Image 1 (spheres, rainbow, N blue to C red):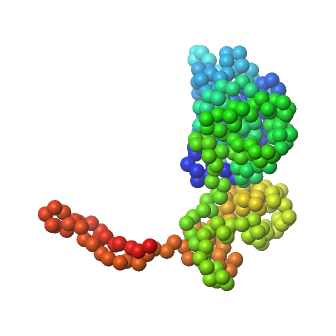
Image 2: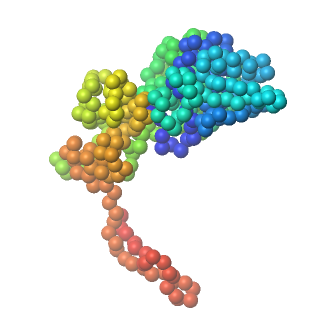
Length: 351
């Protein structure tokens, strides 16, 4: 699930398998430079094969004339890119990012079965991150991958688990964290064992409701009171909703993988977070919140129709936004007292 969905933050796709190969099979001394180069190529090659010259790589990644060839060779060894030197063009190469499973160029707009996560484009231009010679990029990208996999920007990670997730030692992690959290606009926040991915533009919290916070109101028929939508979106209600829709779901587990109901799925490919009420299928790419699940199930783009169906399940009446009653009409005139042309009189509403 894209945790940056509906935030307006521009992102690009990075494959989970690509990151895993760099973390698990990459040479330790080359992981940071290899990953930074890989991130740049993922952004640039999102539209197919592209030319990238050495000057651009140096500018955006901090790599040097010595480290760039090593990072390129490492990505080729891991079978994550295809690089071809252009004849007579100096240090200009054409690149394509590959799907590690098929060996074909990765296409995030297609359905080639590759699972990917989103990385904010602005991080490529964050000097403190990309120019850092420690493994801050590796830690940040690993956290992004985990947050997208679990469909939440809030992660329960002890320092030991965060180091293991990033395939580094706890000591290396301590040296890498300042570039992520001790900056004017932090990319992450860590309090005790809680790790939160932040808005890379503001340093504030992301909207983790995944498109569920419309200004909609509900009427609880039993209590007879009018309440906001967030009072319906609780972990208890998420359990009731998703367990009725997903036969494989185990109510006692906050995060789990089950078979997707929207395509033939022999292996569990849908991640469900019962605390956040979010889901994401790593095979078909669908995901969102409870409303999005209902829209997908009903095959509709009508949000009100989905909310109405959810309301019926919980025994509440769907009201939606209420507009005030018309209290007066007024026709505007210009300075010569002629009626101003338009679609009709202005309607003033109460409320």
